[in-house]
Image (cartoon, rainbow, N blue to C red):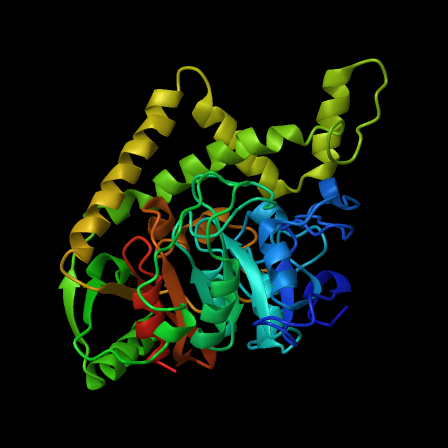
Length: 424
């Protein structure tokens, strides 16, 4: 295991000899099932769990000739923004040592940034691909909901999460997306993407002449001054290449973080109920009282952040509070989708800083969960709206990486890939 603690399990799984990814190495986030190789979700609860099957994306990687080099470290069950809630210890940021790599797919981003893998897969429920991509100075793409199969992804928030690629270049990320995208009979939410060209990689032309960029003013409010400066420098770069920008408004994003966490925690509460020490996970030791055995299994198996989110999600779904919290959060989600649709009717893509702050120092945010939640302000609205978004490096502030986020209409991956490739 590397000094940066990038992998939970290092294992070489060779793919077919031929294929578009032959000779390429891929790190896989440790919540994506790999047959015969343990999949822990960064949790003591699944420390020894070995899936009997491959996730659809893993099967497609192997068929494409890729070699999987390990299961990447992650925030426990995908719950975190810094990769510090992992039961196997935090991952250091190879681009900015002493700082967090972002989460929850921090190990995947770090593997690419450190050269431990050519490509990587992560999952994004509220920014968990884009955040670590920005913090580690690599490319990370969150596809439209339904573009990539979630079969074999250990569920956190089913209605929000998507598997997506990390790479050092936009074209490489698009090549990986070409391999994993598309319908899957085992995931009824998947759709045929109906590409305009032959592939997503073909869209990485860098041609942004005439591109209309909408800049949501709300996603700049409160951002770190150095991050904002790097963002405007990147917009100026795109303007010089023929793009034009105008300001747009997304008034609903003021409530997006609250709505997201109510929905995500509620879904997590339901999904993680299966981890009771009987069907999955560590046993609590039956001594005549099943309730006590379940409680021990969950107390010993789950970390503090997972327990916090289960408790809050269970509360939000409880009788008497469902309408007060969960139903209102779903109403807010519909409002967010409507605002994005209106903004994208006047723009080809929307642009914002990926993260409003540069990478935290290791340990800085652990005592203040609210600070961690608020850091997701620019990424969670995209998941609520089921839209695609990409984070591409956009310079530095005080020597720390800054990412630019480009958001497209539903199944508009080609547009954001084209725009992002112009910044390389």
